[in-house]
Length: 329
Image (cartoon, rainbow, N blue to C red; front, side):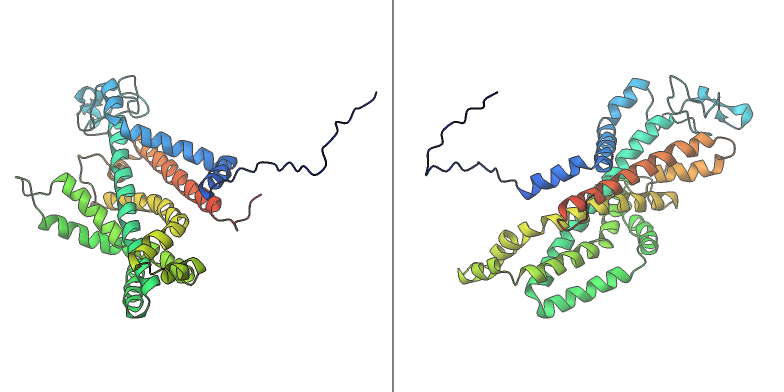
């Protein structure tokens, strides 16, 4: 069998076309190759979708988060759910709460909205504050860096959860807005978000400050100064675009931590107040009925574990994808 070779014109060079890939595209490719990160991403997106369509999901069953079903509990047994597994049925997909008859499925999906809102809102607020403080401390240096660094040290030294427990009810009681002498639920959530963010911004600020201290001596910053670029241009056009990776990593890891903090505060009674749905308060109530109705504690507990675990694994995957020096198998 004879193979014919095609003549090649001498002097002609055929250069292959090489398509450049942005850092974001390269990071996304690394994420898609990591099965654990992809599973965590799918689970996180599923939780987000459930939270967004919570009203539609509860409309299918016909029960709201604070709509009691007196027929689903038995007064002869101390108002415990009728039937096995906490009263699970086609009407109540996850059963009902002992004592109240609230639909557990509705309270869980609405409680998911609360947890995700507090987690993401406080993470956004703390990340923005941390980025601004870190940029200022790292770029200006001098007394600005000294003052901001000392504030960061003080904030990092605070026992976060203890001070949030102490401050939250004080602020909420000072902001009584409804006719019953209590605080509006939206305002309570706002206070909770701000309190969590106040004690969380220093972590991001410390990280950004360290990166800026390195970047401000780079050639592209010197070139911008030689071209008479202003401080605002250097900070937000030169330095900030080079900080998106550590900022995104910090945000991704802050969300599950804030969700856990919010659940702990509600469990202790200083977060979301019943009957408003929240996973922390659900676990607090369920702990009283564990022996009689284990499903009441098991369902929200497992879901909270899965959500926080998925967010943590997703944050770790994002960190590995954005770090070019990370070890990859």
